[in-house]
Image (tube, rainbow, N blue to C red; front, side, top):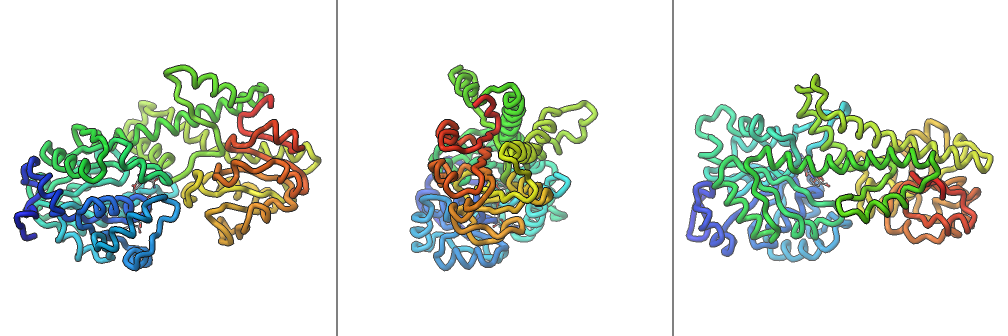
Length: 466
Ligand SMILES: NC(=O)c1ccc[n+]([C@@H]2O[C@H](COP(=O)([O-])OP(=O)(O)OC[C@H]3O[C@@H](n4cnc5c(N)ncnc54)[C@H](O)[C@@H]3O)[C@@H](O)[C@H]2O)c1
């Protein structure tokens, strides 16, 4: 990579106090590998901050969409305007050719998927494959930043040696450097989170941590939290998400107890929320998405070698609880149908929402899948409506075009996702359209008194005594 007054030849050896000059002149070139849910908004942010950015992805149609000015993340508000701006100014281009991008760039950001396999073992194959390519393509002085969520120690124990390979020149800390900035943004709110949520930065040396911190401060304007190393940054990311998984499991278990005790969990949580050191989590149909469930299994994988000590039992049990909630939803359904003299077998059940979280189009590890599979097993007639999946096939079922189509002549409705469209439905609409007015609210969004007044047979997770 040739240097000029405005472009650092070797970013690794650049004095951190010089970085701002390069940032202001747009002299630092960035490559984001993996331009999906997180990588594309990341690439857009770097480009919008004036740094020429190349997005690399193996998904040819995604690359074509980006280059033809067609914004792909329709459920990520406000990035569309940034997208239009940077594409017009040619500050962002996309390519499938990693070899055309990496050698030209000073910073390589890895925003690659880190899912798990069917045995819940983390799958880092995308990072491993790209790491091997970097071995052949990295220019001297490049900084690699891993934004993907990984187990503590993966960078230090595996990724560095994959990138170095057998090439004696390619030493981390000398020829290139590496940092971890695990991404913590929430789908549907990424633009807000990028500037509002502090960024975690850990690196293999202080100088790299300083350089990366300067770059991230310039691009995102968020508070930067510098951690001692990559593994501590990744541990912080996982700890925050596993904390949520465990607390949701706790309220899910309480919810089932309170149903039996005739107690409404919402009243309990409202009261607890008044105490300064309580953090409210809500019960629900389960915990899905590419983060929380995977992150719990990542930390369990880290503790695998210490299994005999019984370490982290709490996470394993929390996962079991959260994974059992879809079956509890079907039990509530059976109970409510029983009240109107029907059984799950042969009943028409309208499922509202398949996304794992409200107002986004994403069904990765969504609890809806287990509910649908169970209803199929029990021979219900399943109808699905989700405003983000209309007239397409999801879990082998054709989805409905509208809420009305879904609930028409249904024997029961299950609200699985709290999409905005489902939050303000007048309960009398269900009563007027359904064959039998049974509603299971797995997300606590229905006004129970209005529902009962309208004549709905109501069940909700944790809603004892209502
Ligand atoms: N989605 C979230 O809510 C979220 C939030 C925080 C962190 N994360 C983490 O960010 C990382 C990325 O997640 P995501 O949700 O953006 O995933 P994603 O699946 O939406 O995007 C990943 C992209 O990488 C591409 N890709 C896969 N293999 C590749 C390869 N070898 N070379 C180039 N491109 C390749 C895919 O085609 C895809 O476009 C994961 O580690 C995830 O855990 C995700």
